[in-house]
Image 1 (tube, rainbow, N blue to C red):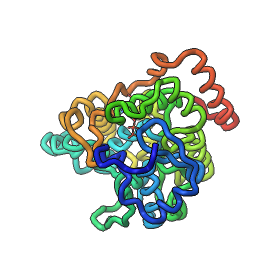
Image 2: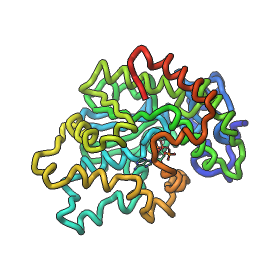
Image 3: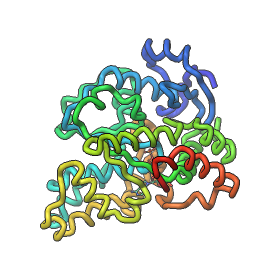
Image 4: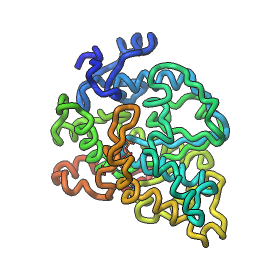
Length: 334
Ligand code: PAP
């Protein structure tokens, strides 16, 4: 796949307006095709499509973290949309609550897709290679990124800002990614069969991958700096949402009070952000993001264990072996 960007492609696949630095760097990076009809490049050990690489470089240069910032970090398809909604609802809970029905009806999550409310650094704010004006963001500023720990802008690592990482069983993450990238490929150009995509994923070639290295970077950081990095699992959030939500609130320094718990505020947030609720909203059934993605593409099944419907026993054996090799020593299990 060449890097001559086609204006007829959806915005999220275009790669016009690359900075000179990005163009120069591209000459020296290993590149590979697959997943989407655009090139992928290996930068600092991780794979990025051209458009996102432009955003990563720009964020690395320009983004200045503040101590009060909160970051949502994840591999694509690990529960990013869900966690965006949860963080937003959690941090704004005093403004929107159930006793006042009108306020709850006005909740931003009912009007907009979470991706339009919490912006990614590399795919939204810095994607054009410019330095956006963030002065309208109120504290605590909430940002999201798929950038791996090693490549985060230096100020994010050096400041006291908080990082919340969401990870998911690699098998479900893969199945979700395969569906998503097929949907993102206009007229099925450049799409891969399940087998091809699986092989790429297991070889470590996937967007913001290798998957396992991405998870490990944040997992190790969470062990070394538990006050700075919180490591959440999609499966645990599904299994015990109120426990995980309270853990998140404690970590962010905004624990639920006894009164709030008694008033059902924890359950209210879980209900508001649930797959059932968000996926049925009109905005998420018919709307589109500025990036050109259809909002509904972020809501497929929202289940744990859907991989059983797609992976053969041989595939399961291969991916489980990699997971054991990579995570076993650290006791990280899914
Ligand atoms: P992104 O990184 O591109 O933003 P992300 O939100 O991480 O994608 O992943 C989408 C997955 O989360 C989808 O999983 P599936 O393909 O296995 O169904 C999507 O259905 C799921 N998802 C989206 N919203 C929720 C939610 N509120 N609760 C649980 N799962 C959700």
